[in-house]
Picture 1 (tube, rainbow over the protein chains, first blue to last red):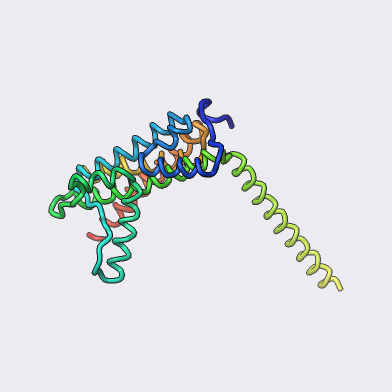
Picture 2: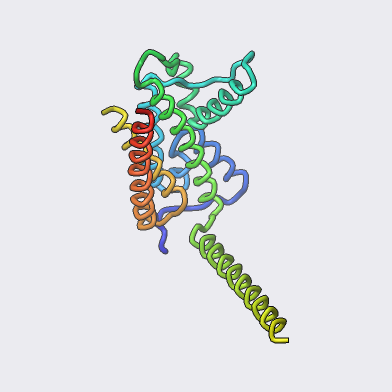
Length: 174
Length: 56
């Protein structure tokens, strides 16, 4: 199928592709903007930023690495921190301004956390997509290859089954 | 009410992001997003309602 955006481009080196990945992580949507995918940048960037702002407004908590926690507590805390770090600069700026402390008494506290973590995970997905676009990854070709591989696997299975049926029929007729 | 709105927004956001990161084709993005959104939103309402019933 045809590409959504005619202005889209790819980068010439692996180093630049890595740069796209880092920029896409730091600023939501910036990676796609670099590659000339303006519509995708606007769509994904605005969703990530809006989700993050809603999370902050709902008094959600931005997790940070903490020492002196029990095993499971520290595991959950670390995973939540990694998800939060996915938001890039938004995470650091919020912490810098003392936002995202979390108010447990608020009824929207838990939903706020869900929004903040989702925003981080969205941005990680977006950054990976920007990297793939930057190296010229062809989604349609990959899908076609997957479909062909699946078809071949099914054909092999059918052949094997037929062979088994033949051999069992031959054995019973003897 | 706020829970319902949040559920709506998050389902919509998840479906758009997930479908938009898997392809560069607009038709596919819209098609997949609507499919994911219907599944996520209705699925979470049904699961939430069942939990509400089970929880009493």
